[in-house]
Length: 336
Image 1 (cartoon, rainbow, N blue to C red):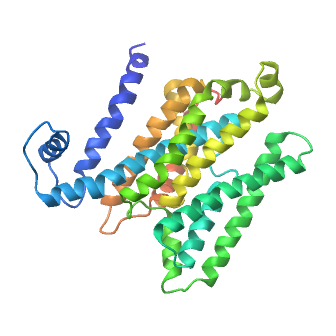
Image 2 (cartoon, one colour):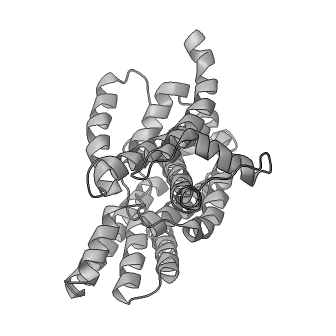
Image 3 (tube, helix red, strand yellow):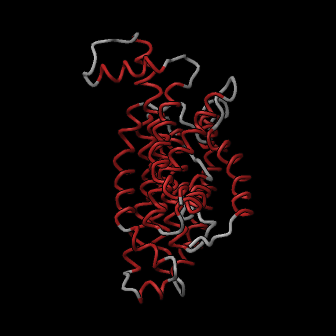
């Protein structure tokens, strides 16, 4: 009982502690007193100042990266949890309907055409949304049975097509310039994040998150099955459209600035179920918090693990696959 009572305070305190820890970590040393002084001065609580280079490192480099890492981790984890409930499958991740592949193609196209970073990000968001819209439309037209099954199958097909298009762009790209840029971007990284990136994605991410959180009560009956949910009065078609729309906004926005970061939306919902149980009223917020903390810690590791920054997508795969096996071996509770 004591452990259960500690869960909520821990989910509140842990992100704050990891946030502060991440501000301290980096190749340029910054002390806790300098961080406190800087934020105190910005809030008008003190007249003390810090060196200009310390202010630049904290406000222009680390703070946007930390904020975006937490935002992306929360978005991918919530998307994974919502999709796992909607599809009634514990192996579903946020890219199941082609959002990541579509966004990856959009970004690769922008790099190939030498577009600006902002235009490349908008291309990634647009193609990510377009891929899922194509999946949803085709699944509706071709459906001959279970709508959920047809969505999954169509999503796999659309994702395969966009992955093939990415491969074509890589073949056609300049091997000395464009190809390395496309390859590195697809591996996932937050190395080049700035305040502009945060402003571009925060709107779509928040819209998607709020939409999912507002209907999280209805995911419980949906996770029992189509007929059971309809018998409980749930409008499954509308609910499914809201879930897909919200998850796609979050996933495409995340991919547009960070590249493809896998495994977060797959393993974090399972970890959250072990902490708060399978009730989606608690599971989605818990997934968001744990996902934010997890991706921020992995990003800290990517920054500090070696002389060169490691690709974030590679690290999440190396950590996620063994951890997922561990979760499956230890699990004694159903996922719905």
